[in-house]
Image (cartoon, rainbow, N blue to C red; front, top):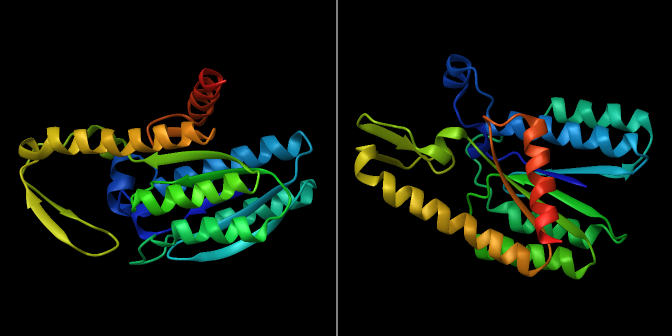
Length: 222
């Protein structure tokens, strides 16, 4: 199952900046990565399903292994749009809903920036694991979120709540990067404890590199 976050924060960077910089949004990157995974899985005759969510579960395709299903899945992915001004507090609830809905054990591939309360998400991941599902958690971030390269006095806007904050980046850069490290390390620690996989990727990474990063992380765990 490919479980894709379509909340407003996944639309970063904004369309004008994405075109100017030649970068994908986080959602576009997640969609392309999901399509590549779906293609690989169906080519090896595995059944693939898809779920998408913003503030709640919005769509679900049951898994099938036919090539015609792959075309339907790719078509659904191509039509996905970020939800305007929707907070993805629904991530945890969407995972609980998938755990309740899917009775046959399988592989859950979750693609999200995870910019939400970690405790609720980790509890939902435990729910998936308790149902016998394998879990791969891809944290999809923009390159600027990982490196925080900003230099000029800037206004930062939360795309979901609309909250604005004007700061000088150099004054907060170290604290921001430390907070991001702590946040992602919590996911690494918790997923390792439940024998799940956590992979952080950013939009500057090629898709083959993202998949290789996952395979390397998985080999280290085993």
